[in-house]
Structures are given as C-alpha cells and as structure tokens.
Length: 584
Image (cartoon, rainbow, N blue to C red):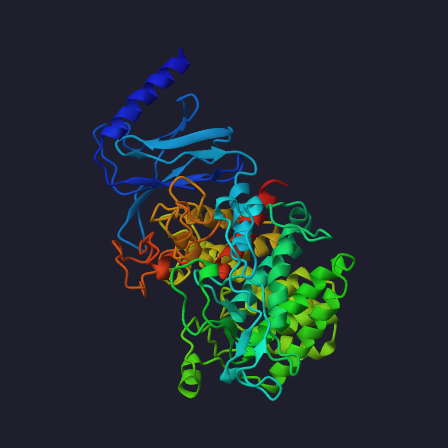
C-alpha cells in the first residue's frame, strides 16, 4: 500500500512539474554520485509556490520503479557571486541506496537522470584518457580502436622545414627535419612544446601518484609489442615527438611544429600545408628538461620493454638545462619574430616572458631524477616563490608536487615543511572561498576562475586539493575536489556536462576540427570543453555574458568551446584520482 501511494504521489508530482512554466532548472553531476560521498544538486532560478507545503521540498525519484526514494528540503536562496542567478541547494548526501534516479522539485522542474554506485565516474575517467588517442598525429585511427571516429593519418611531419627564426649553423633555413607523432594541441592541428609540457607533467604525475590503478586501466588503444600501461603508452607517443623537437647539436628546443596559419575545418589527411619548426625558447627548453627528467623516473620501471629510453631522457633533460643556462631569458615573441622573418607564423604563440616557474619546476624534476646537487641552488632560490594554479604559463606548482611526492628521496626536511605549509594554505583559501559560492564548489570562488579554459581551472584546483588530501588525509579536501568534478559534469550555471559523450546534456559542438569535419553527428568523446569565458574573444553570439554563464555550445566559439590537451590532462588526473580514492 505504501508503494502504491509513492507511485501515485510521483505521478501527481511529475504531472504538476511538467505543467509549470518555470525558468528554473536543476543542475547536478549527470554521471552521478558515490554511495558514501556528498550528493548536491542546485536549483537555479525561481521555484513557483502554489503549494506552500511543497515549495521547499525536493524528491529523489527511482527511474525503475517511480517511487519517491528520498525527500528533503531545499536551502534558503543563495545569490551567485558570478552572475545574477539565484540558487537553492538540494543536499541528499545521507541517501546511499544504489540505483538510477532523477531529482524533482515541486512547482519547478526535474533533473536529468543520474546513478548512485561505486565507480560512477569510470566512464568519464576512461574517456578523458582515450581522448588523447583521438588527438594523435601522423597515424591512422583504426575502427577497432576509434569506432565511428576512425580516420586516415594526417601530418606525417617527416619533412618539416626549418623556419628562418630557428636556423642554426648546422640546420640552415629551409633545411628539412623529421618530427612525427605527438598530439594535436587543441581544436587545431599544430603541436606546441610549451602546452605539451604541462600536459605531460600532469599525466606523468597521475601515474606516479596512482601507479597501481593505472597499471590496470584499459582504454582500447593499440598495444606496443611489449605492453606497458595504457596511460604510459599514450604518454610515450607524445614523448617521442617532444624529444624530436630538441636540436641535437645544442640542446635547445623549438617552440612548436606548425603551419604558417591555421588549417580550415577539414580532416587531418586533407590538411597539407607546409609545416615548420620555429625559434627555440627558454620556456620550451625548460619544459622539455622537466618532462624528460620526470619521464626518466617513470620509464626506468620499464627498461625491459623500453631499453635505453630512461637514459635517453636524462641526457635530453640535462642537455636542455645547459642550453637554458646559456639562454636564460629567450622569450618566444611571435610578433617580433614576424617582423624579421617570413613566412609569418600566426598560429598559437604560447609566448611566456616569466621563467621563474619553469626554472624551479625543471630543477625539481632534474634533482629528484639525478640527485645532482647543482640543481639545489635553483630550488632554494624559488622555493617560497608565490606560484599560482598550474597552467601552460605557470608551472611552478608542478615543482612543489614533484618534491612532495618524492620526500625521503634526498629531499631535505625543510623543503617538505615549506611546501606543505604553502599547499595547505592555498587549499584552505579555496575552501573558504567556496563557502560563499551559490553552487558550493571551489570553482567560482573567484571571478578570475572564469577565463579562457576555465574548466581546466576547475580540474587543476581539484588536483591541488587531492595533493593536500594526500598530505593530510582530511576528507574535506577530497570532498572539495569531488565537488569540482561535479561542476565539470553539470553542477554549474550553464547546466552542461562539459565532457563530450558523457551525461544527458553535454557539449555537442566543440571547436574541434575532427568533430566538425568527420561527418559523424556525435563529437569525438572524452574531450573537455573550455568552459565559461566572459572574454568572448571569438566574437560569436553568446546569449549570456556573466562570468559563469558566458558559454555557447558552438564550433564557432573557440573562446569557450574549444578543446585542448592541457585541459584534458587535469581532467584525466582528477576523474581517475577520485575513482581511486572513493573506491578504496
């Protein structure tokens, strides 16, 4: 009799919800929730109040039976700091029963379906890593691995031209080198060392921090003759490209392998413009030094499968360091370069003028991998430097992470104390700011969170919080990291899940040449869209312009809807780390 009442109650409630003309909507993690972890949804907009007793109630409804499985009360209205939105919180963390559900609010609306189960984020975690396979240059993507997104190889990059800005005594202007493989950087088909730097560091760090998990994670990608874990298999494909971008004569590293201008929206095999390597720079060279040093540590575990690779990485890293010491402030200034040389290069610059973060990061990785005392002075010089959240132009925190995960491996105790204090203070500042956000997420605690690639901020904040959780074992940091994954998967002011192919309402039209040109309705899966960006630099049509709502799901909108490897990498780390830590 009770079950019948619940079903009848829901039929009435569902009909009532459907009848409302409400501008409100429910946003939540469209993948779902772990049984014993926090569960929060947010009602954005006004809730109608014809039934005073029900206006503040929400209901968790079973998708299979139609029963009301849980009933709770909405919070008081919270005004957003980042838009004109008014929100109310539905907290159902105490509800732990596994299953498929929707959340409904009387006088308002109902949510997309979601699951409560262990390993609930496995699909997003695996897809975010598999996305790198779809970004591979210089190889066919076979239907066995790529499914309906299979394609022919593009950009063999075996006849790349030395641009006049990159000419040297032995590699003269117009001479040809080979630099195949690697990942396409973003929605375009160029390959950039600086952006590969933070991407590779984030993926290598994921393996160092959660080795046992990644040793058994399979994503259906081609296996080498002597198998290694899928994550390392993918990293290796880009590592070999990065190493080919180092001038063997002097150790300097070219900034990028690129067309003179961006390709049109065509498939990779249809893009046949000449390719160039351009000017060497301090940032690119130190990025390679750091990545190669970290890779040497990781691949040392696989000397049977990959003989000589670890040693080659150490040689490349040390050679890059020597070049950088001779050229300590060689900025890549594309505008200045174009005033001097032809052809003009108008693809992404990734020009960086501040190198303290690259020096510190590279010194940390080299010191841990080689134990050479000569790197300690640089570490000490920048140890207390105020580094910000990691990005392609701000890599100092990667050095902190490196030292912390290698404490006891000739790392001095005073380094540990300094770094621990800095990281905990940063995390606590984020937690404090999150208390004031309408969505109760760390992401959005500052308006500055919303910029080009804002979703990478959410993911990188999550990584910082997980690093501090690993230091302290305090659950509040893991919960906050999970909250930022909730943000990416739908608990945000747009209502979108920003990962292609995940959730019921996700990005469908990313600024991504393959997804636009392949004739397949669904975009390449597992890609993280850039996210809200009030800068709107693409000048496309945006319906909303406030910081947390300035997003449009259009391939025109490269300022908010492009994809990029340095955004996907922290998603790989965050989603997989949460899977590990929530299922221990």
